[in-house]
Each structure stands twice: as C-alpha cells, then as structure tokens.
Length: 252
Image 1 (cartoon, rainbow, N blue to C red):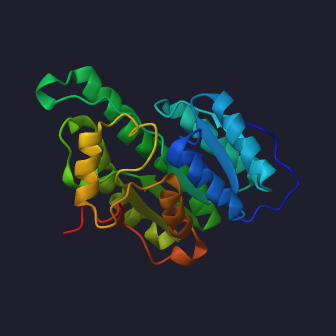
Image 2 (image 1 turned 120 degrees about the vertical axis):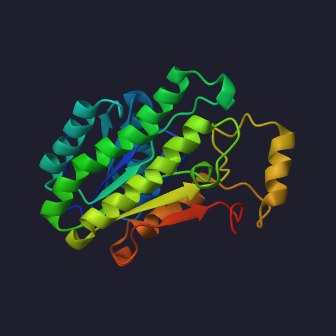
C-alpha cells in the first residue's frame, strides 16, 4: 500500500473492484467528495491508472492489490488501512465475477467460484471492517448487489444466489452494528453500461430497454451517485435497505 500523505483526511474509504467500471466510478466520486480512497483489486496495474486519474482531479487515493477470495489478504488490507490512516469509515464491496450458464448445465465449480467471490468475499470484508468502524464509532458499509439478486435471472443461478445472499448478509450486519453508528445497505444496479454488459446481443438490450421506465441503460456514475449519498454522514438513518438503481426495471 502506498504511504499516506500529511493530508488530514475527513473520511477513509475502501473500494473493492476499483480498477474499472462501477468500482472506478465509485472511487472517483468518493475522492471528488473529499474522501481518501483505498483502491482494491487483484491487479495493481489498472489501479495505478485510477489513482492517477483521481490525483489529477485533485483527490487522494492509494492502492492495495488484494485477492478478495483470500481471507488473510482481505484482513491485512483492512488492518493496514486502519493502521496507516488511523481509521476506516467506508467500505464499498464491489468486486465480483460472473460465470453464466443455464442451471442444468452449470458445473459445481462455476457455482462455487461465483459464490466464493461475490458472497464469501463480501462477508470477509464486512467482518474485517466492522472492528475499526466500531473503534471509530462510525461506519458505512455499502455492498453492491444486483437486480438479479432481487428477481433472479435466467442463466445466472450462481450470480443471483450470491447477490441474494448479499442482501441477507447486509441486513444481518445492519441489525448487529446499527447501535454502533454503523449502517449497512445494498445498492442493486440494473443494466449498466460496463464490460459485463457490452457483449449482450441487441435483442436482449432492446427487450430490457422496453421494460424500463426511463428507456435507457444506466452508466457507472448513476451507481456512484447512489453510493455517495448512502456513504455520507447524512445517511445515518438509512440502514438494512436494498436500493435498486435500475431505471424502474424491477419496480412492483
């Protein structure tokens, strides 16, 4: 992890999966709002580019290459952050993978690998972050879910199960930590223009757009804006919630 500067940081945030897409947009928004952002992902190279962009815009960031499926590595990342900056205020669990397949064709390995990163990894990070947040008497845990975890999705039994699990996990942390001034919420994106959705055929995209109230795909900044509020000091009465940022796709 890069050494801290002498800047007196108002809040310190860890954002996992920060090298691209939604994670990158979240990191850049939190930095623009005055937080110091610890950028976490498996590979250091892409994170360096994100850090450079943040610093060029006047923000502050550091890097921690971390395998989110490795409990020891995640614990070390959290411990190092709390030690280096004297605090950890915000955790955004955004790291995730997909291994799509129809349920009848899905292998055990495809199912387990997605659950390992998308659910177990989130639990490990939340558990690790809870202690420094309790010491600081403040915390904002934001887990990036998916509308797949709310309504299911054909071809994504593993991904939908993991994201549904994240909802239950987050609500449990919200109940356990609420009295400590620590909130926990889920932001559930719909169809967002990222590498993950860029390969969708036009027929699928057209069908999705027709079901949306706003008739457009989302952009990473739409998710970053939601995270900016949920992670703010003003959001202390919001916890245990699932906020679907999906253009009205899943509204009842």
